[in-house]
Image (cartoon, rainbow, N blue to C red; front, side, top):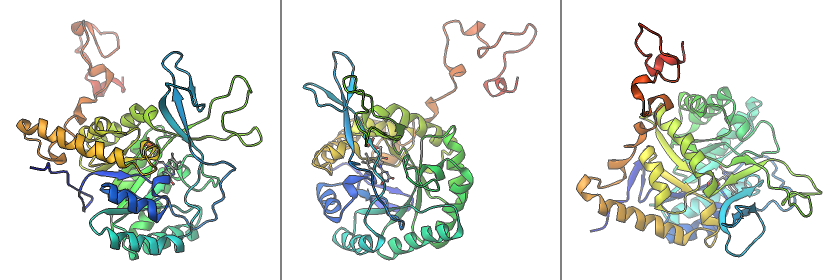
Length: 379
Ligand SMILES: Cc1cc2nc3c(=O)[nH]c(=O)nc-3n(C[C@H](O)[C@H](O)[C@H](O)COP(=O)(O)O)c2cc1C
């Protein structure tokens, strides 16, 4: 019997919980059709905007690799080197909403049972910009998108009122979500930047604005390394570089930490996990922490641009996991989703060899009980 791979997430039925994230794999109709043919349960389109998009010279993503002998991380191709990460400073889709709208409709007609989420982005500095969010949302919705993902997370926008600059401001997160919510009849997901002090603050603002789910992580702010021979950044234009985004295996542990903060703070809310997934091994961590769906970019780019082998591995990994855990009663994702969430605790709650003498890192005070962990910060 075939394992039950399906999940209902924010009111949308997914045949399987794996999506291509908003990025080059989902930048065209032909890519998305190929992705669905390969078996992906859903896609999030490359982010669609209304403003002019002009990329820097050579904006294509590059891949960093590392070698076992010296742990050197470099974009240079070397024999025996393993993938470390992707680095990019690409902006959002340079195709217009008018270009996207009929394509969204055609893709949904071709694959009505697969999930198409439209990623959208506008500015935040004025009522006109909030109306842009609504225009994008209404058009994608009218053309059959199953949901919307608000991009509050691109780490390298050329405009200061966009992308992660919204995701770093909880008030803007609320305003924009609310504006989209006013017109959206379909689920609204907010994709947050990991580059803030406490992602729980911005997630709370999105949920107050009416978000159905929070998505994390986009790429982490980062720079390419400097070549020791040429003394140039491995990527540069006229010797100059600006902060770009790091994705792929290197970000998995950091993205998991962000996700754990989120799922612990909002155990009853919906989360889609992204960062460093190339097979079920990594996706499982996101499910055990509480995610209902998982998204993939870097590893899919390196597998024929849309990841036909990656989705095969994700699906067979899920099937095998469910088979192996039949005795635990884990028959589908929902039955093991979030069961490890409460294993992430404060450092002071981890067992010590000399537990009796330990007072959460503080001096014990004679005559008083040891402080409880939630009292420690107050003392
Ligand atoms: C070249 C490139 C372009 C991207 N463009 C977008 C985008 O337009 N919108 C968006 O929300 N995320 C974008 N992302 C971020 C990915 O969707 C994803 O969040 C990130 O790469 C982490 O996932 P990964 O570790 O599987 O790569 C882009 C990533 C890359 C590498």
